[in-house]
Length: 294
Image (cartoon, rainbow, N blue to C red):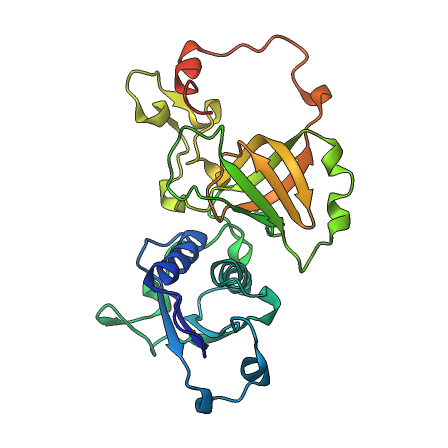
């Protein structure tokens, strides 16, 4: 259960903003909501020495300390820090490169959590991220090199299945890894294919067999690989959307069925030559399921 302490001479952005930041952390780590705490401490002018803060004409970027268990891998911590930097930059309207964060590890036997002293054998940190420490929890050879290239920003935060057609989103590339050259000529295509991670689905909710799509008993049971539900092994989504424009490292799109904060794994231009060359056949229940999707 991460604890995040943020320090700044600026007033707190409010409990709602801090709660949104906490929700982003728990979603990334596959924890239940409420299993991340965030504090904001406003510093008086004579209680700190940071020249950037004294000279700042705009809102100052905070300094933060993240306390987490030593059982979190370096991969998890890396992704957590990157998420915090990205979300704080957006939520506070400050340059992300001015946000400084450090991690403090809680070691076994030195942390009291919900009435008991934490140990590695009774780890309450929740499910690990896919790829953590070289394991995925699934059968087969683990994959360890998947790192998000971008994140989705939009107003859709609830996990609702339908009405994605008019949703506008910004896919923002990781500025530490990419320049605008990565998007050169992409604006000559009208549509994109986006591969992303269903980060809000806890690993414990993954389906590996058959179920009624959307748990609707009126529709026949179908194997998880015969439907496009989000509770799927590896929690990977693939979608197509319309590209409106590119702007620096931002892709403005319409119709992307991914909620705010979704990690993006890959982006490709959609080519009609990759569409089916034969007639597409599908069951009748699919037409009913997709009736209000877009």
